[in-house]
Image (tube, rainbow, N blue to C red; front, side, top):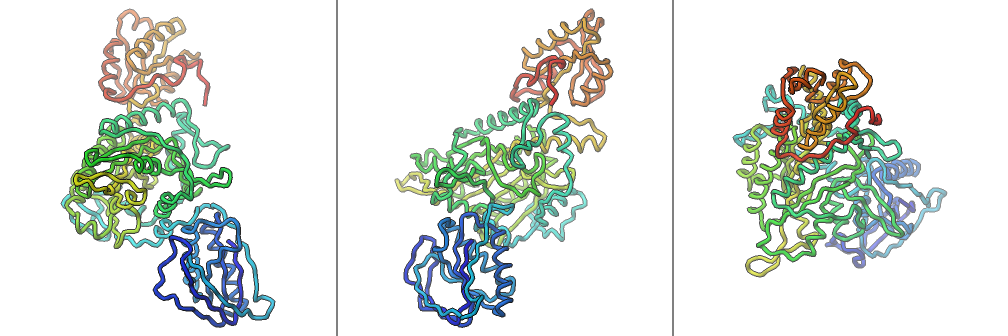
Length: 618
């Protein structure tokens, strides 16, 4: 940010005409005069952020103290820099600067933005009357200031619990005695603190099981995935994509970066409270996507759509989406800066169709959460909406709560600021009492118009659709975080921790009692592999007991020790880690049990060599 600070005896300006589309409307265009005032001619630059505003406020406050003045006029002035922010960004920052100065006790006037103005000034004659200041901006931990980010900080929320009967109970009056996780979730949401003060248990588990880890050569929140983790992640991706395909969505692929000055995107960014990575290419700036919305909306805006095509469902599994979360909030798989997001948008005719479609999508979400192994009992639901939407659509909202089957947290706003009128999400509460959103859906009433998306209605007229934004699982990385945290909680309760069998990198571990049985166990493993079951062989030069302990430590469900007795009888002694029991089963019976439990789930082969002696250690 660049400022020319002038201590003036007098200053007068007069608005002449609009220069930009986002110039404010002026009822009174008469000249405005000021006496004994500090005038700030301000150029807002591309990299200015919340920290820039704080620095400017501190600098101005010091100058006002030195000058013994309490009145300031902020005058938008684009002629001090060649690296100007976009008009929408500049307007937001100037408005925020004005508000911050007012909050600091300064008498502030903000001259109209986006207008050609003429002015006259009489500057006082003393050494401090004219000062030029450069406040270096950067995309810092807070990120660029957008309308939505500012609104999110200022937004007044009213918090309630809604029960299955539709009763809306203020959080202070609700009895949380049998809803411990809901209470933790409420406290987490109301506090709005996301700072990491303790490392969650899943971090140690993801490293111990060679699933994922931090990559020091990259930015925080960008993970490396080892073979086992890549298998787990890929299986979840495939399952979620299958469910969305069965729902009738059309799978597409779109770019990961977009021009920050594209008119529709610039407008959308100002309405979305996310912090972006910025990439420069030549003299243009691009932001890395934080969802698949942009690509799908731009694609839909160029499609020919009839009312007969509605609801039109588009789907993309983004590899990757990016949000430049604060470093103090980034931890493990809970909050990342690069993540894999299944993103499904439905373009619908009107609000009635939107509500019916959202009900159908909610049932899909509940099924996905159950089948992924997280379980409805381990998530809490939040529904967020405006007061007007609630009053006009109460029965619809209550129907979602009934479908969920237990009380939910409600956040109500007096007015709509974001592009949606309703959103809900299912949140997992981890072992530290922190909540993370998984599945979500929204009713978007702005972006059909913003992106110029139209459909031809029955009467032949073009209309803008309402858009639903759904992620059936939330970020894939967060699903794995939830599964690991759930396993840790089970262990803490004295239960056996594990991943769902269909996600286990090794489903069966064969342990030959001596080297002469390695070939036999390899044949068993091959037989299971042909039946789409992941089996490996521990051929290392270790004791059988140590091999069993290590298999249990790896959370392998079925452990089979093979020796002379098993060869003669044709039956395997199969240890079930979950029950601790040993059953005598044929290879066919073992396969049948596993396939029954993993039916309707995707399969991928063993991610590492079948012989443990051949494996690298990650």
